[in-house]
Amino acid sequence: MRQVSSSVLGSSDERGSDRRIIQKALEKAVDEGKRVTKTGRVATYIPELSKADPEHVGVCIKTVTGETYSAGDWHEPFTMQSISKTISLTLALQTAGYDKVFSKVGLEPTGDSFNSIVKLETRTAHPLNPMINAGAIATASCIPGEDPFELYLDLARKVCLNKSLSINLEVYLSEKRAGMRNRSMAYWMKSENIIEGDPEDALDLYFRMCSVNVTAEDLANWGMVLANDGVDPISGERLAESWIVRIVKTFMVTCGMYDGSGEFAIKAGIPSKSGVGGGILSVVEGRMGIGVFNPSLDFKGNSVGGMHLLEHLSKSLGLHYFAGKQQ
Ligand code: GLN
Figure 1 (cartoon, protein in one colour):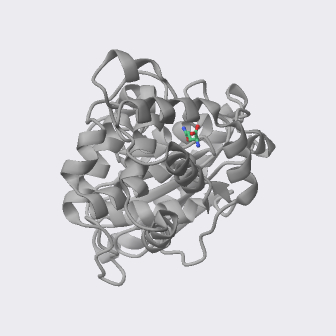
Figure 2 (cartoon, protein in one colour; figure 1 turned 30 degrees about the vertical axis):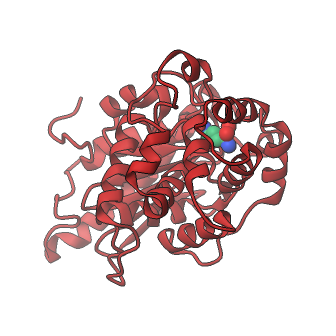
Figure 3 (spheres, helix red, strand yellow; figure 1 turned 120 degrees about the vertical axis):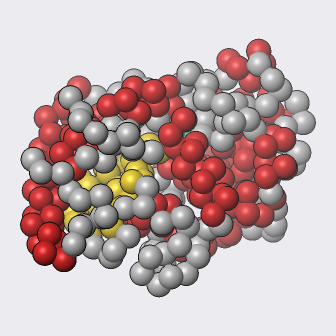
């Protein structure tokens, strides 16, 4: 398949055929995603998530030149889960600043599962990065103000270009009831003075942030804003500061797929952040945001259909950050 020109959609006479290429590639990628859904399982440790249909596969692309492409179950709602960590980190850096946030949480990938506790005690006193659960709970605890969730929801609505984003109360309550592992991490971090306030407040904020409903389109919008250095390419409005956007995208490369980040970087080469709701947020620098959905997960908590879809798309459209000939 001819690769799509790197100037997003090429010159005007290339645009029509580029559009068709992208749409066909998306449809093919959804088919590819569907082929592997049986190899994974929906999350059950948050009981409400077990109701998801593992056969749903959808994708949406938003280019920085204002085009939208979608295929499959792109309109299905699902909760952000760990994808919220990209927005909560943005908010924490914006409100509490670099020094405060990175005094609580590190900058290194862990190689362990997203909900691992083990390095909290054996390594430095703080969680290794803001993309694992412990790190995200610590990051959330840095956000100041009376109602940090309101600040979060405002920012999420802004960067996803969707004013009606809202919390899924069933998922929130389900995780609040079941989240004992996260609770143990928060209390541990309190004992180490990493969390300064009440650990229950940090947990409640974290559970709420994870429980905001989105679609693949909402994620594609946030990806597009990230791809465009924090500026909404349509309105020209800056929605996130450039230095923060760079940090978020870098974490997406090094830690976005947890202990699957290395393999995904080789196979797809697209900065991405997954969540156990089945979503993946992806950024193709300077070109597009991609939102993907398939709730069938591998044992690392990454969407199997979503990853396969993205690997396929990366090859067919030449999206790997070290583009060139791919196998
Ligand atoms: N809310 C989920 C949890 O804390 C988020 C994890 C994820 O998406 N990987 O377990």
